[in-house]
Image 1 (tube, one colour):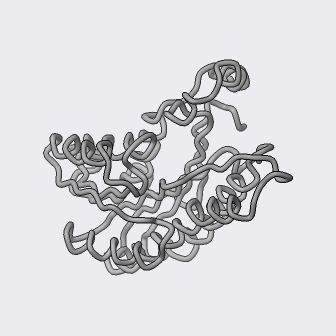
Image 2 (spheres, helix red, strand yellow; image 1 turned 180 degrees about the horizontal axis):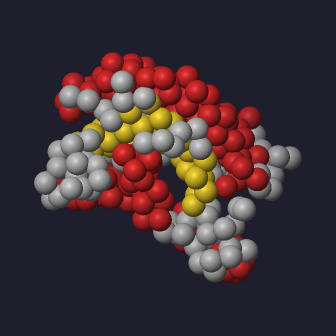
Image 3 (cartoon, rainbow, N blue to C red; image 1 turned 60 degrees about the vertical axis):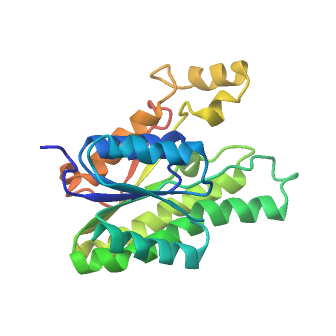
Length: 248
């Protein structure tokens, strides 16, 4: 029996990186997968084909997770298409890193809207279906910098810290209806974004990690399998650091 057999997962920002790894991991474990992204590009189109090859139902939706009305409509469409939504993974996110003295109001607002408001939008839209089912798992992608902060990332850190507070509140609100809500705080994960960093900066990050390596998107996806499955049926309101002991 696969760990997510018969479940339907919705993953935002899934065309590449961590989101893509989660979508593939879910399909491998037997879940039907609805996924979203902003751009109808080759990554988006190829993911749907890749997921269908696992013999599950899969469909991509072009949607802006930071837009309230768009998110509500998308979730309604997914529920109508798939019949239910068992797992929500709020993964959509961006960075606009710079020191506070140089940060513009637009850079602040954009990161808060995409990273934090999207979590509100999707959770609010999905909860009505999970409440009817009296079951569900909500997984919110935070970050180690949401736990400890980081110079040059005050907007990103604030958005990811906000996700942790939101997660703990929703776990208390929805727990009586058997709906769990947890956050994952990835550390230094090797993705397209981190590949763009200079080698010396990447090496400096790795030196600070007790496991002496950067994480992979699959490391985060494995944590999402655990939190989406019945293995974590008594885990809610928690922040799971996937960081190689970078944060202890």
